[in-house]
Length: 321
Image (cartoon, rainbow, N blue to C red; front, top):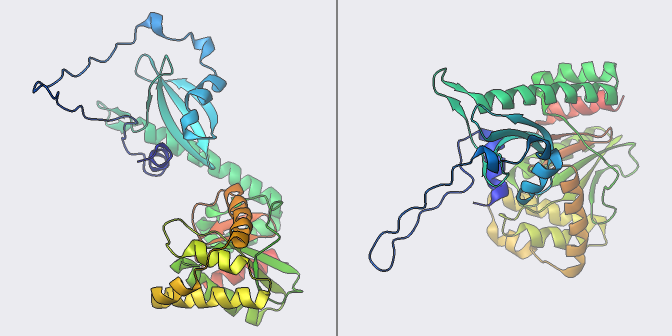
């Protein structure tokens, strides 16, 4: 499992997973090699506390990619630091030895009290993050719209994300609805995603009843869908908007029918489309896409998943006032 995937699992599930785990093979000479005795960390070998800075820790964890070191604390275990990090908008706990040579991802359990100390830390930071996010949403939308949206979504309002729209791709998108509509909703979609296919039907229903709303589809083919990349490139390379819609409609129909033959026919990767889709992917990554579909409103807020038609339209009605 890749290190980044291990980190994501730890963030989501708080499982006790060791970062490095391996079995030693038996010696070919017929004798089992003695497992090396772990070095004990002597106090003199530790880095001075003044040297354990956020920059140093970030450098030590560079294998995980770009992340923010939020806080460095001592843990209940001597010689082990508890590090709060933030990656992709999510918090995680990583434990580091005092020489910044070893990392552990997982749960630290207080055996006597039977408490999951790691989980307690995670819950604390997630609650703080949620509070900060709701305050940011209120500031972005205004108190009136925020409260109206809260009535529509209930506790699910915490699922909303704040995103930056400045890098929306200019080429290869697919528009549904009145091209002159004043209110544009953006959807990041995979042409082979069943949830995207479900949302696609909702999009068609909404643009039929409201001529002041249009949807602009941005394509993000997921790597585990075998035909998605070729279909996305086929769509993006078409100069005609009508042709783009036709291919995407056919693709989602085939997904709903589990018609792999049609998906294969539509999958026509090409250099022009690949270049355009790379811009779509760059935008999706810039808004911390976690899965498709992702619905992005022009106010700079987003929500993931195939939201039911009625709920989605209620959100639009509140936001476009």
